Length: 46
Image 1 (tube, one colour):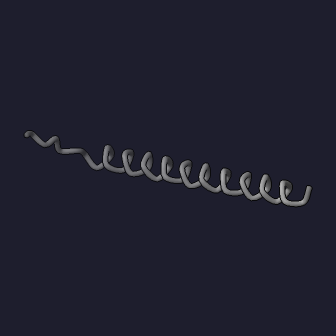
Image 2 (cartoon, rainbow, N blue to C red; image 1 turned 180 degrees about the vertical axis):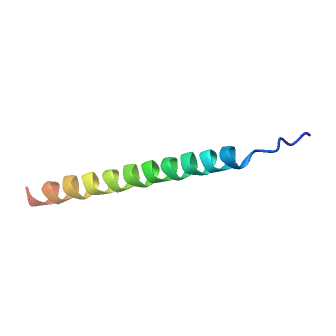
Image 3 (cartoon, rainbow, N blue to C red; image 1 turned 180 degrees about the horizontal axis):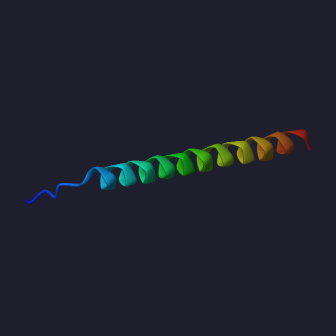
């Protein structure tokens, strides 16, 4: 199996993209968590 050497610019670009993807995933998880809390909260009140 051949490995491709990445330049520093490519490594930085990939790292930035990975961080951005990670933040998006964390944001979605937080959003679902908040929506779930609101739904259960209002569901219990009625």
